Length: 112
Length: 115
Image (cartoon, rainbow over all chains, first blue to last red; front, top):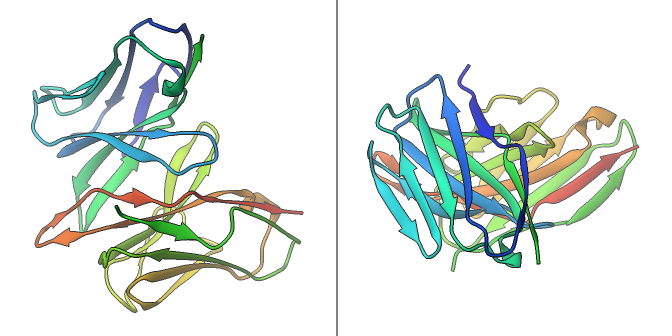
């Protein structure tokens, strides 16, 4: 079936550093989504990407929809302690409904 | 703001018990979803519903059933809880605009422990 791979699995960085994480798949997706989940909460949508090659920013976050439609990356610039959490990529594909498949997540820890 | 609420944040049940997890959304969304989240596996879809009284199996429906009697409420039922159903359960909802499904909004999750 369709699967997403995320790397790295976890990251420990110093406050102020830039972060880069990516998501790959053997399948093509119509939409790429990036969610963040803080401890004890449900995932919250950060960025949605709808077109191959699209580059979108949301504050210090930038994400791109890969040209092949099989990958996406998320960058966080100048990390701060509240960036801590698990970042999930998700791909959306049209089946009988708009199926969303989630990656296993990248756990980010920021050291003040 | 979209609000998705789940009836319990933490639940402890015994093997064989019937368990109900409730989810309510206040944005008149057509679609509602139940996922379970396990470390290293991400979110896996159990069931979803695109209308009242309608339901579709997700990727891991075994051992679960659902009920949607009202548009705003979607219940997940574990008929006979087992230890391998210990997990975080997340409910989500989304708006359906014609042929395109909008972004899913998640509740805070219910952490279920089955002893």
